Amino acid sequence: MASTTSSSTDAPSIVPARLTRRLLGWELVIVLALSLGANGVSAVISFIGSLTAPAKLSSQTAQLNGSLAPGRPWLDLSWQLFGIATALVPVVLVGHLLLRENSSLRALGFDLTRRLDDLGKGFLVAACIGGTGLALYLGAHAAGVSLTVVPSSLPDVWWRIPVLILSAAQNAVVEEVIVVGYLLRRLDQLGWSWPAAVAASALLRGSYHLYQGVGGFVGNLAMGLIFCLLYRRWRRVAPLALAHTLIDTVAFVGYVLLAGHVSWLPT
Image (cartoon, rainbow, N blue to C red; front, top):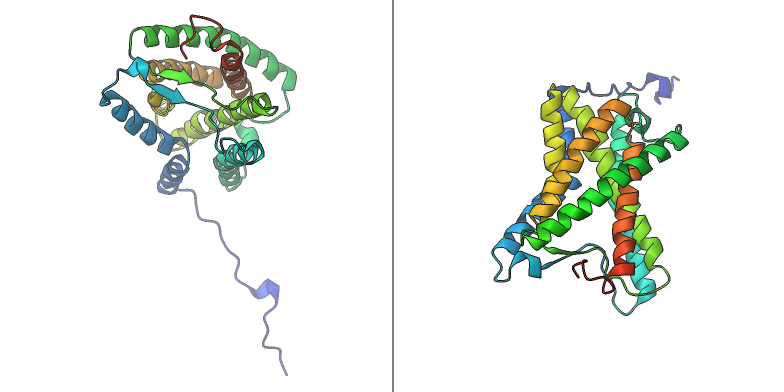
């Protein structure tokens, strides 16, 4: 009597869907809706709220790293680490999506194959951009078009500095992998011209910093343009992520060390 059970070789094979422009377009929309695109919409709404508030912009604050469980340091630490880990999920998603085209995050230059070169470039970019960004923020704040940015209001506990460094690294990885490497790759596959793709990337970066005010938008718009040009030259996201990590680390930790001790830093 013949067996009625089909062998695994008789099962129909599943053919992956062809990556059409329509499919790639919807994929891009979904990735951005789950990450920095949604942050951009949220920042615009926040900025409108700040503009329409009775108080002037410079007297309002934008909190970046605050306590999630005041008075309960271990629970607070758990929430901080949870938030950092889950914020990286869109990057994992991007890596998974790249596998469909027999690629990986390495195609974006996000790997450890050129560690020393990436580190040197990262330090150089951070040194050039960091000081300029601080000057722009202070000028915008003095002009009354920027909120007072509070990089950290975490309690003075042993894990404050490590969490701030991890937060800086998380911001950098998410932004540079998605807004530079992935976005520019997908827009190129969708037939966008290089100037249009760069403009889209820079505007997106500026948009999700708009909650800080005009200074945050303009500064990050300029940073986005520079990072796109550097990515086109180097074809690597890693040095940009390193530079971004250094810039944010100095901003976060520097604020903790200097706030209330120097007159030029708004608090």
